[in-house]
Image (cartoon, rainbow, N blue to C red; front, side, top):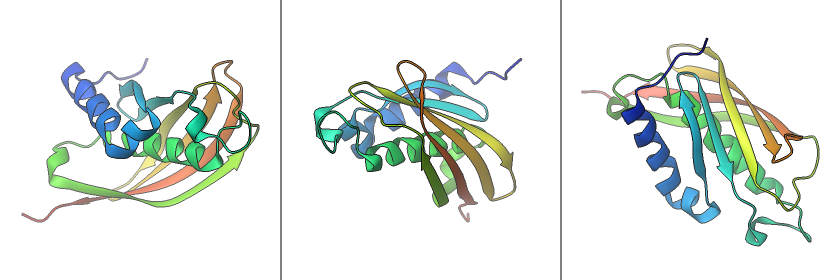
Length: 144
């Protein structure tokens, strides 16, 4: 059984990622937020393609990074007293994302004092895996 997140906090996280300048640009939608997990969706947009209907690898990487960031923050108490950044990200492309929305399901593998290790699966609307990512996210408490 999975843990649940306070609905108010989940809604605040959804708004944060959907209204971030880059999130708005690529149309990010918050699908699910629970402790240790976040799912974000990026609708298909011709502006995010390389050739024909193939979603650009950079757009896929950005989706994976944003989902990992969201998941890393789901277990942080007092988020206003922290800062974070992606420390490392590797992405393996499995298949092309073509002409459809993509979703990224990010899950915490291990969370230490400052480093959080995550696994992200990016998949299309048919639930075919498009990419897999490993992310290390650094969270630091702000002095004061």
